[in-house]
Length: 282
Ligand code: SAH
Image 1 (spheres, rainbow, N blue to C red):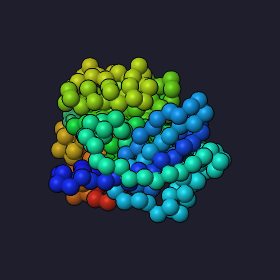
Image 2: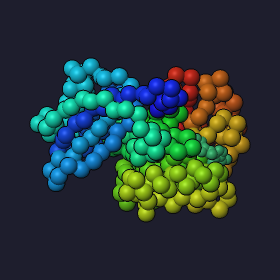
Image 3: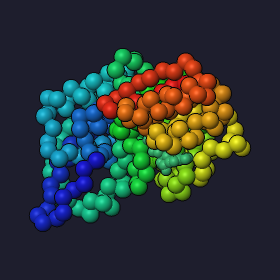
Image 4: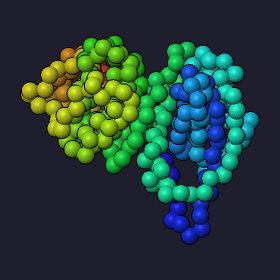
C-alpha cells in the first residue's frame, strides 16, 4: 500500500470504475488487485449491479486491465458479460486517510494458478497490525493452510490482522478456529477484520500466547520470528495434534530452528521458501 505524498500540490488518483453484476463482486475485486490497484471501494447501484472502483497511481493499460478482469471472471466461472461498463476518471485527493479506512485490501488467494475452484477473497484493513497477505511469510502460511487444513480445528498463534484465522474459517464453515496475539491492539484489529468478513462469530480471539492450558488443534500456525519460535516450539508441538506450520524464519536462521526441532525429536519436516523467507511444516 503506498502512502500518498505530503500535500504541496493536490495528488490526483486514477480511478477505474467497473459496473458489474452483483455475483461478480469478488472476481472483479480480485482482478483489480491483481492488476495493481492500491485499494478498492464497492458501492451498490441497484439490485442487480454494483460499482467497484479501483484506485491506481497511474491509469493501467486498458488492454491489460481487460485481460486481468476477464481472467478473474474465468477463474470464478463467470461470463465476460458480467462486466457491464468500465470507466476511467481522475479523482482529486480528498481526506485520503479517512477515505482509505473505508477501503480494505482484497487479498488474492494463496495460489490462484492451477485451481479451477473460485479463490477465497479476504478483506483486510491492516490498521497497525501485521498481515495483509502480501508479505512472504504470510503467503507461505496461506499456502500451507491451503495444503494441510482439512477442517476440524485450527489455532493461529500471533494472528496480527487475523488473516490466517479468517482464511481458515472461510475454507471450512464448520471448523473450530482460535487465534491469539500478545498485542491487544492486533486482537482488536483482527476482530474488526473478522467482522468485515462475516466470520466474527466463528473465531475465538484471545490476547496472549500459547501455554499449558491452550486447547490442542489439528493444525497450528505460528508466523512469528526464529528466536520466538525456538522458545515456543516445545509448547507449539504439544498443542498441535496434527500439523504445525512455522513461518517468519529467514533462510540464515533456518538451521537454528531445524536443530531445535531435531533436539525435540520432531521429524518429517517440509521446507518451503519465498525470497529470503522460509517456513517449515512439522
Ligand atoms: N499471522 C499474521 C501476523 C504475523 S506477525 C500473518 O501471518 O500475517 C506476528 C504476530 O505475532 C504479531 O502480531 C505479534 O504481536 C505476535 N507475537 C509475537 N510474539 C508472540 C508470542 N510469543 N505469542 C503470540 N503472539 C506473538
